[in-house]
Amino acid sequence: MGLLEGKRILVAGVTMDSSIGFAVAKVAQEQGAEVLISNFGRALSITKRIAKRLPVEPPVLDLDVTNQEHLDGLADAVREHFGADATLDGVVHSIAFGNPETLLGGKFLDGPWEDVAQAVQVSAYSLKSLAMATKPILAPGAGIVGLTFDATVAWPAYDWMGVAKAALESTNRYLARYLGPEGIRVNLVSAGPLRTIAAKAIPGFEQLDAMWSDRSPLGWDNTDQEPTAKAVCALLSDFFPATTGEIVHVDGGYHAMGA
Ligand code: NAP
Image 1 (cartoon, protein in one colour):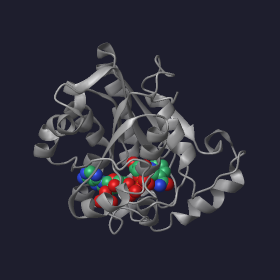
Image 2 (cartoon, helix red, strand yellow):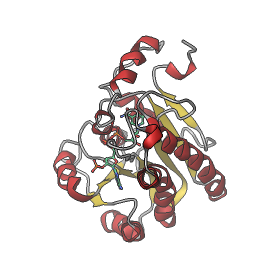
Image 3 (cartoon, protein in one colour):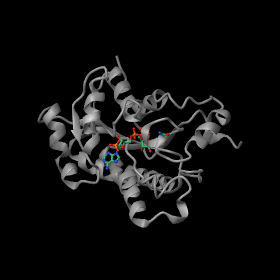
Image 4 (tube, protein in one colour):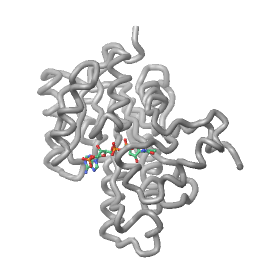
């Protein structure tokens, strides 16, 4: 029996088959879950094509996490696919955006507030938005899992996205505090650098890529999304019933090394 047998999971933030969200949806299906995926705007048609590459083609929802109408309609959209009384056992937040032209790749000192505000809204505040939008249909014991890139230190090139990730990590802890009494767990997976569209858009991100595999005691394959996806699915499963507000590193051990 699979780790997620009988569970229903929404994976928000799938564009390509390189997306971490795609790998999560794949592992979740392999582990017995029924999955819905989402993306927004112009890339929705790409997501619909890519969805056919999953073991079972999932429904694709249109969800812009900054659009209140989309958030207000999310519970109904999920019920439309899973049934009128359906609940969700898991929600995956695999979403981030920061304008690469103004905020990343050495632009830290000049990053304009409007773009920083957008990065924080899309990449951090949206974890709260997504949690609240799905809360009416979350099953007892449900898990919410997001993706971060270690925000405890300053990286080359990552700049304002690092600040947005620090906000995400704090949002994770506060959500754990406020939703724990209702039996909802909220956790993050902190992944090492992976060659996705979002990562390729960061000017200078290859500097991180290059040093990662040398310093990680387990080594690091920046083209393999599966270890990260497996950790997300483990956190969604019943095997972490007493874990919330946590950040699990899936980075080859990089974060624990001094040099
Ligand atoms: P990705 O494939 O580009 O996924 C990011 C997703 O966020 C895309 O589907 C993107 O849609 C979506 N998105 C952006 N703005 C949105 C909005 N307003 N509403 C809804 N969705 C929106 O890149 P990824 O690397 O898999 O990123 C997934 C998560 O993992 C992110 O939180 C990222 O920071 C995190 N992470 C990545 C790495 C890495 O090295 N790749 C490492 C650690 C953590 P569009 O494509 O349509 O813009």
